[in-house]
Length: 253
Image 1 (cartoon, helix red, strand yellow):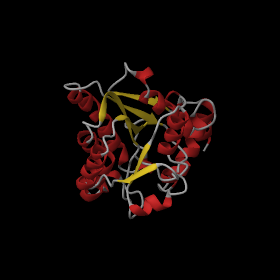
Image 2 (cartoon, rainbow, N blue to C red):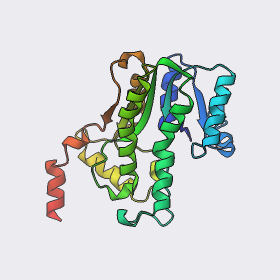
Image 3 (cartoon, rainbow, N blue to C red):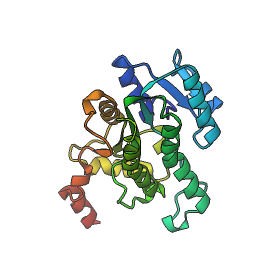
Image 4 (spheres, rainbow, N blue to C red):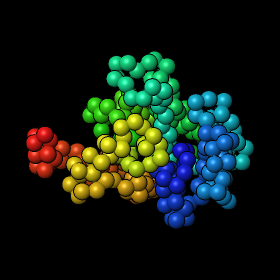
């Protein structure tokens, strides 16, 4: 869930899964998105499901049930926030903005998993895409960090509630700043991305393929002992905020 184009994290995950022999089902949010991705997803099964509408989630479940499709895993790579006036101070976030973002970016995971619980294999793996830190008040990310924090917190509760009848696992890949089409549309994000490249010890940003590889691992049986966890993929950015060259550059100004 979440393929928009070739730069999407979900697409890179799908490519890895297909290269390992998996059959991947895709969901897109609208008919127009299905048309936009028709060339990219040619020859693959593509279903429409806008997770903002429960009836569409229910229809997705009914379609899979009708065809007796069983799922070894789910990739939830969905996030949305509305910034009609650009990024504003967090305290000016409106109720409508915040609740819509929570609904699409966080609650949708709960709603989808509940609807598809009888379609999941006994030992299936569910992976969502988080962010490397929800505690850093990055202004360029608007009000999404608290919502991603709620998303990651829900993993423990999903793992616990599903454990009553299955061994389904729920984990997140907490990704550092990535160069995707969605992120490029966030005001100020590009500057933050360039800064991250300076702070990361190796001197280059996290690649989408690195996030995808971690997701593929979490989806595989090799991660059977991991659940309710967030795996940070930030190439060491969080250990290097006080890099000498970065500090000197700031203090000289």
